[in-house]
Image (cartoon, rainbow, N blue to C red; front, side, top):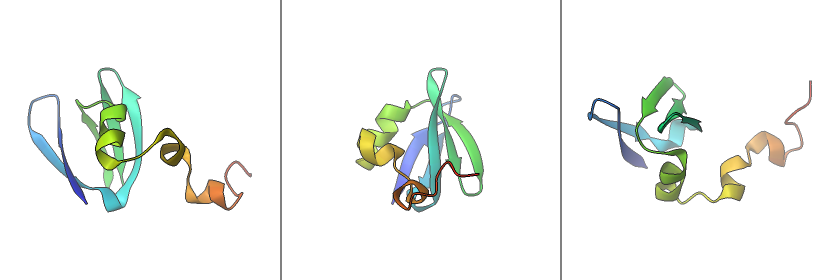
Length: 73
């Protein structure tokens, strides 16, 4: 699934969400981490998660967590 986001200069950015790694709060917007890099967008993490249909539970559960691996050294 592709989503259109906006950078702080007003330009649209299109991201393939198949390769989305994380969404973090950053000032008035969010830092979106993708497998090929990061970008800062003007949308909030909550707005992005809503568009993607992610709930608080699914937003914070990762494959490693489901297998009990996350947090191990």
